[in-house]
Length: 207
Image (cartoon, rainbow, N blue to C red; front, side):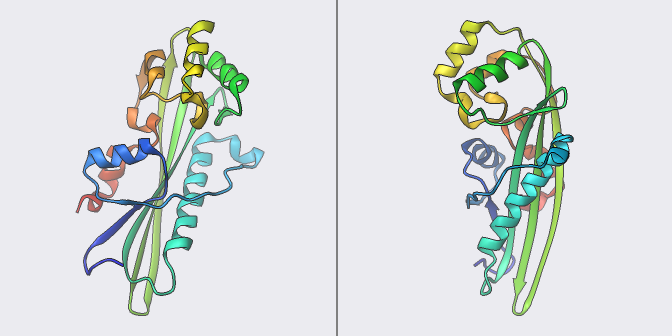
């Protein structure tokens, strides 16, 4: 429960990268991770931007259902996001195993791919018997070009264990940052939360 006029900001994610981005931006928030079905229909996968937005909304909605109980009073802003890596229309999720990570990195090698991060912010307000929800969802896209990777570089990176919880089998903030030859867009988008654009749209998060 929040105090009158206070905004309770909630990050619906356990991602340390998203947490760090919000903290560095000066946002005061708490974490409420959600576990949702991230599967998508084939039609959804045809448009990575819409797919990322749909998953972000699914996560935010789950958090709202869990947090906005009948006795909730106050104002809460729930932030959820999802990141999708796509190459020539093919969506790369989190790798299932080493072989899958090796395949993804091999296909990304020497080519330009897209990283789409969808963000959904739901504002919940409850005062007395009045209860309202409004939400807005957007996506930000960055184009990432990898240098040509050797088999040894890919194998060395996989041994770090870093690829396995990341879409596209890499994280730009880690050792894989050295793979990037060119970045057209926001680094924060590639990391999983375009916090600059988020705060432009919702400056009240810094209040």
